[in-house]
Image (cartoon, rainbow, N blue to C red; front, side, top):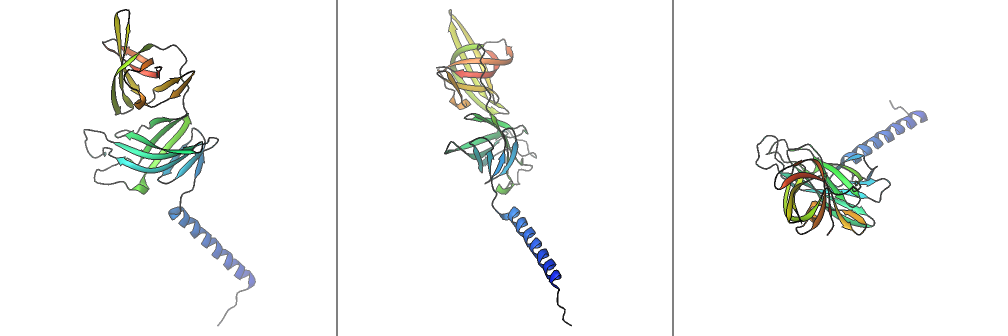
Length: 250
């Protein structure tokens, strides 16, 4: 026996078909489609898979997570003599130009790392952390958690010590970028400070009346620097302290 559907039944059936088709399309898009750009404000964290971009609202700044070029972090199930590191490569676009930047985070820590780019401070970490040495993390599993803030303003108070850089010792371990030996020769006396440079230490290059924030790698021997300390100073020779700010003046 044949049955004919009424007009209302046909409309209802067709509507259900359209809704089901739309749901399937949305599901497939979320699973297999390309990831579109997101937008966040300064100070908001975003989680980026490889290939995804984020636009910082109100800023001429776009960040794309390109790849993980190295992941040698010590897995949680083994004991290592070196904590290893992970390097996330990002492309930053601003003011009509683009530049690739390497964001390095040491292993054996859950603490985020920091890097300054132009007038911005990037706070970031790469997830997941390797649980077992024999299990490789695939590219589609990586996520870059990143927060963009305005770079901090330089201190305007008088420096605690002024001298010349005579030694540089990169460390790059658990928040410490390295140490510099700074010497001052005055009144036939020699003062020396072994200055620890942390990730949060502000490093500036004096350009006339302006100060431009730079990376630890820009420090060179024979540069004249001003140093602001934070925390206690160890009374030894050379004396030792942690820098809150370093400014290259010559």
